[in-house]
Length: 389
Image (cartoon, rainbow, N blue to C red; front, top):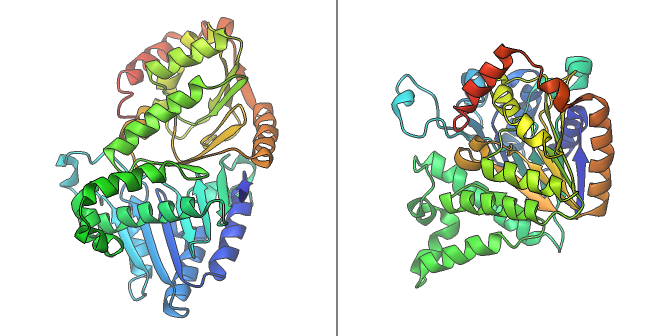
């Protein structure tokens, strides 16, 4: 695998700017949070230049909740350009009455010329930049992959899925359906082939066999597949389970599995956020700590800055993307995760794990049991709403 992993936002943004400047054919960008100032403005300026001057086809999609305060500013800036800009489920005074409005597009994805892609947990915000935010910058992870002979199918299916989602939203056909696929230019020719639905299912199956392995939640069956494969991956662990998620509200099935692996002598550790941007999710997650600590699972919370990285290391297999270890990522949101085995990537993640642990506080059962009644009460309260946090 030809790629690079970024643990600092400044490095990611510098690399992204360089790749965007060299784009020749197409740029696809998808973010949950896209802030206009100051980094977003520079990216939008590049996108306008690419679309208007270099005639590069540019598509940009942001989420209606995550980027809600920025949408009008972005739209005004791109109003007279050839950049195709859409909003995933815009929020209006009537949207609260719509079914599924809480299901958001949480993906962070960039595809440039079908040759380079970025995916991970970073949004377009100043909080990721040490230059702009200082030492309190958020800790996050982003992965850059380059296309080669061994991963061409991965890029092909990644782009196809991204186009399906983008065009479905543009045509008002979300949630994604077969109807949306039938109307896509890239798939029109398939409609004349006998057994189209069977061939579409085969297309989905093949997308699960790419290298690196790609997990998306485009269709309901994809979410079910992601959940089952994640559990299967945890079950396959022989040496270590290093799980990183800012919002750790695991299902009972996952918790039982983590306890079982810890009792078998496998090194099971969880790194999550102590300083957080979603207090309710942290409290809900803490309600599970005692259950896990009793079995030997080690839990760490990063204290000095917000931990926002979605990365895991299961033996020598790395999983990086936008999905958290919570109900929202597994059951509701549009997410994107990549699973790969690469010795260089594994080494980098282990080194970064050690750095993260040095910034974190380990939760010990004897001390955790002595927390106050308010903590216990809020933990139980928010755990009751875990399905929607």
